[in-house]
Amino acid sequence: MVLTLALLAGLVLAWLLIGVVEIFRLGLRFTQALLYVPFKLAYRIADSRIRIARQAQAPVIYVISHQSRFEPALMLSLLPEDTLHILDEASARSPWLELWRELGRTIAFNAEHLFVSRRLVRVLRGKGRLAVYLPDAVEPDVKMFRLFRAVTRIAMQADAKIVPIFVGGARGLPVSLTPADKAPRHWFPQLSISVLEPMTIAELVARNPDQASNTNALFDRVAEARLFGTNLDRGLFLAMRDAADRVGASHTIIEDVISGALTYRKLFIGARVLGRRFEAVTAPGEAVGVMLPNANGVVLS
Image 1 (cartoon, helix red, strand yellow):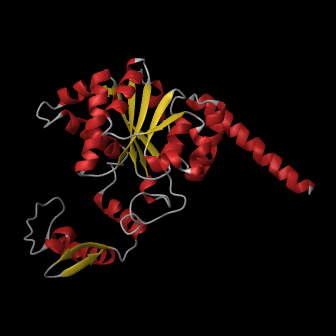
Image 2 (cartoon, helix red, strand yellow; image 1 turned 90 degrees about the vertical axis):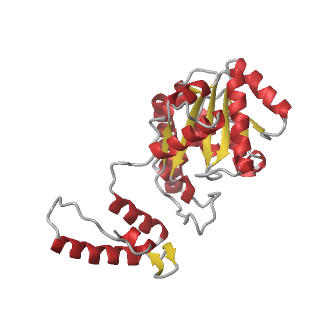
Image 3 (cartoon, one colour; image 1 turned 45 degrees about the vertical axis):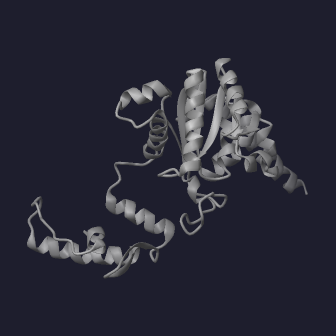
């Protein structure tokens, strides 16, 4: 009994000490730090860039790519306490999020209700902060694009800056919003938080005057956060190997009507065979032209 109590006391003390470290390192409140510690330890989160979000001058809108049920709890733990979090209805009612919802202000968001948008504009004009959780997709559908358009309109009316936030690795969590066949689950993947510098919608559009609309400028900026969280120095071969580790060597990459399905296992076998043949008939650094008969040949080469 004494040993059990001593172990529990040690765990509590370690929890408190790590929380104190996070308070000084990231500027969190005590309760925020305590609720952040389990995430930090379980997922080894690379969080240094969250300082950009915390130091952004109001009015500001944090646009978080909503990949899983995990992001609202994480952002409530990390963003400034005066941030108003605009949650989807499922997150706003979720019982397990109750502790984290107490860390800040939260409301449910419906982009089609104009009175809600006006309320949010008033919050921003009063030097406020908003955190919105938008669906993560390479290409948005009509409903999703409507959400981006609503956020763009709110940001422009309040002259608020946009800070995109992307949590790398959250797509593969057990609470991911992506179907398991597209994003295999992992219990404790390492996560990294990607945060871009604050910019207004006008500044985003000015970077590329050929943008189709202001909403497109916002969507592209959010996509940049996803790209920023990727290690671009990592070669194609290693990236493919990592993908095979995540989804399994038997996972189908592409299907060709002539040569059939190509899995990661077949890809690596084929790449090795072709690589040896090319190596035998070419010199180092020599330019080589290859005629590719089908989709599988393109991927292998």
